[in-house]
Length: 477
Image (cartoon, rainbow, N blue to C red; front, side):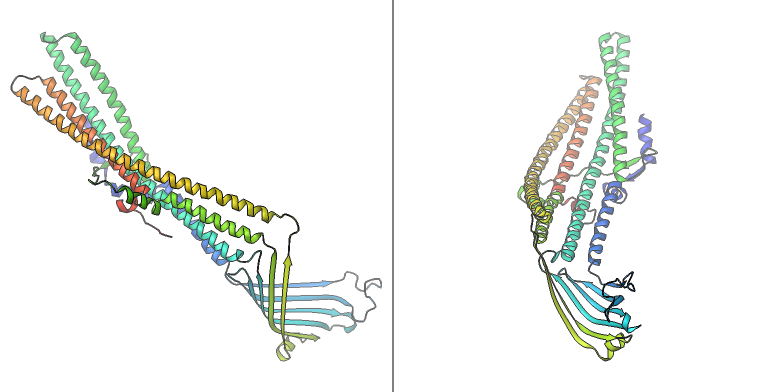
């Protein structure tokens, strides 16, 4: 096993923490899904904007009586009774940001008359027509559609950034956890070697009569415990390697061989609590999403208020028209046009309690709900920042205590070695002091890793983890 640990890193690929983070940001499956969701939202904005683009439209219509020549048909004896008719229009339509529609084009309506043979009464018009809702529907079709799409895009952008931040924290923690697992595995292997050496020495002393059978049994039990610990730590190391590779988006088959070259290097100074909380309120992705939900609900309430109003719209038209008899209608429109205009209004008032009013009440309740959610999100954020600050202080103290323990273990080892050289100490005492020093070193590394994880968690809450690690792209909208 020791030989495998010594030769495995030679075949492994070296990874710095920054390289591991950049690999994860490119290849992680969940982050790629978040990127697709953001692209869909961006396309939604383009689609909403496209709704304001012009469109060319045309229509045609013919009409008549199935039994127009029958003596019993209506107005059969009238000299100008219409047998059938036809109409067409062609124009360019432009939606307006106000929710109205501007139409530019031409139309023609003609009615064929029996008494005139093949002639027809024709009305032609070309010009500009405007239709604008004033109450129900005003400002809805254009402005609200684009606003909703933009809010959705902002929400997906925040979710994508939150996914980035969580991923880099998970990758960094998995990176340090693998380092800690390998140190624990190294210590377990070393403990087995020491236990085997102690057992061999004790058996020799037992054969020489300087040790009892109880000493041999105690060391055999210690060796069994050390071997069990080695099995557990080796399994933990393999699991930590798979966890890191999974987050980095690396293949898991064959098992990944990762040589991690960085070691934790937490800053010496603790963050300012006031600045940390201010940063969290300004940049925390989850909290900003809660505030964005309030904005969405407020706009939905305004839209619902608009939809609950009576339906009132006005229309206006100005252009050129021609009324002719015969087939020269278009020619008459160009040679003998008449200036024409038209104004109109339409009002519809619901007499019963309508669904729009129900939607208005739902929108009001929805706004109250998300406002409470935002208040709860702020309280959660404050509690999380305070807890993260406490964790930083706790782990900082642990690092100090671990360093003091390491120094004490180092001094103890030096003292036992000096006694051994003077012939007043035993080999077992030196070995135990060496074990205590190695355990103190591993505990110090674990404390530094925990401090690094606490600092990363605080940086994520502050919305600064990507900047502090120097990875990712920060998109402000």
